[in-house]
Length: 313
Image (tube, rainbow, N blue to C red):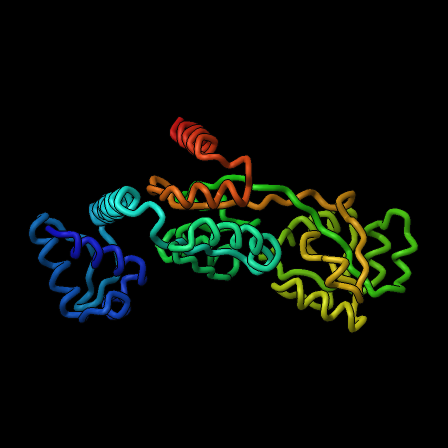
């Protein structure tokens, strides 16, 4: 038994039991993957996969246990490497952040600037995607941490921590009638075409919930994953925009005006996530604290421990 065989097992599982795709992902040959898995099955004396001819069609009950153990072994192996890196070169390494456009464009720039200044030898990478995509990137090991508002707390494989709360604003052209309202209502907003986020992004669920509770059916004429796209079409007077308050800057968005909507929508919470039982380098803890000052190393240990205890009880 060796680590390479365990990697082959997990990759076949990740690739939906397609050995060819697993071999391509591992930069090796399909016969090589098949042979190593067969050798492992023979050594253990059980079948890990269910086969129909040469095709793998399922995972046996003991196979699922083996896959779970293999994942833990490989994760602990990587943790050992990270411990070595931590003490042999504290300020060297890499950090891949998977996040949404809104976080990458509006919440992270100053944090990343500060982090790069503090850790110039750490290779930093940003990956953008939907909340579900970035969660999967962290689970699979393609990224180290995820930052998003929706969905990432729903994955059992991830530890999640609350960073900050935020709300939405309404953006309009400079002379729009809604700007005369002292405290704009959902009913008034619903009188106009609306441009806002795609359902999977940036608190869209809170927007839908508020309109539904008021028995209103807003005319959403355009959705996007990008606040800049929303603002562009508001400038063209195709509708009023509902977007994250952090995405509006009066100096930059001089052709638009904004109204606070915190009285209409429940606040949204941005969270960071990482794989459970993952060994985090010291500079990752520093990044968390730069992004959300209350997330000190001690607080992260406390929160993750408490959540682990509540889940096991």
